[in-house]
Image (cartoon, rainbow, N blue to C red; front, side, top):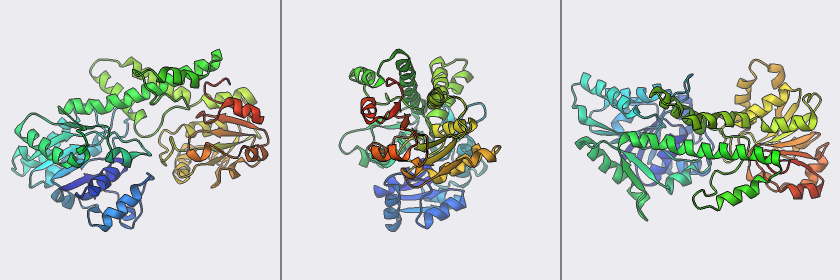
Length: 454
């Protein structure tokens, strides 16, 4: 099938590459010429395991192309995926300007029947706005208004495992309208996703608004579990309980399960923060408060400061002349995504207290440098107190303590003798509970984790 992907960012690239892998002819559009230049020269502007190799394979086979040509992109695909960004607006709502702009371009150029797929994470009612924007263009050109049909097909990709998630999905959600055009669109989507349903049916068909809400509901539920466990972990610290034992105790209940029950320094990334905020904003627009989600957001913001509070408790509020090694910058492992990353808050707070920070991350340091330049734009002197090194052990040289923020596999079993030799004091603040407290005690390491007998 001929498919167009509008937006060659995280979701668009993964969607386009994976659909090309299934034999489809895929045209990826982006209006950023630098991004398209990178892709056409063999590079990939984001880090995602397995994605670069898949793109290379399908470009070589002629099934995947990248361009800034809007008219060519609309002409190419019988199915047009809108996978552009929906950043949070100032009031917390999703900014739909790029989604609507993509729809208008389709309305201006479509000459044959098209299925328009909202792949971006968008609030309930967005399909109506997309349809209206397309209809405006069709009307001006005196074309049938049912030439294009809008479908909601939200993505459920985990950064760091997105290719695997797309190729072996838990579920595929497709929202269509019960109209002749909607039924035709449903059949087109069924054909497109047939290769992903060979072993068993994974597709859930529903109306468009239910599909739009499903995406937000899923992310809100996962964010709620994270904040809930962070609340319990903080309580465990106060009462002397072990949150790991608690996690196993409640996770073994089949009604609860173990997923997303790991305490830490708070969630970040491009999805949970903006989606929880956008869902809460949608509710307020309809005269209702989602009080649980408001609490989830509040807890998550507080959690980003927990490690700093533990550092203060150990060393005092004045951290002048102290130096901290920081392992992990990305908001989660296997990605270079620094959006809403807890490391950014932790670094700023340590510097604010006079400390120097030496950071390491296996892939996120270039993106982290860009983000920290923005974070410290009003404090260039503070930025001078932050450096990054390519080797995690080199980051420890002469530091007073190690702070772990991201649970990269490379950090799980370090040479602790070397760690102790390089640090001026054997102190670890672990925001991801990578190590066993008793094992650290046996080694003579002061170990401060999240909810684990600190």
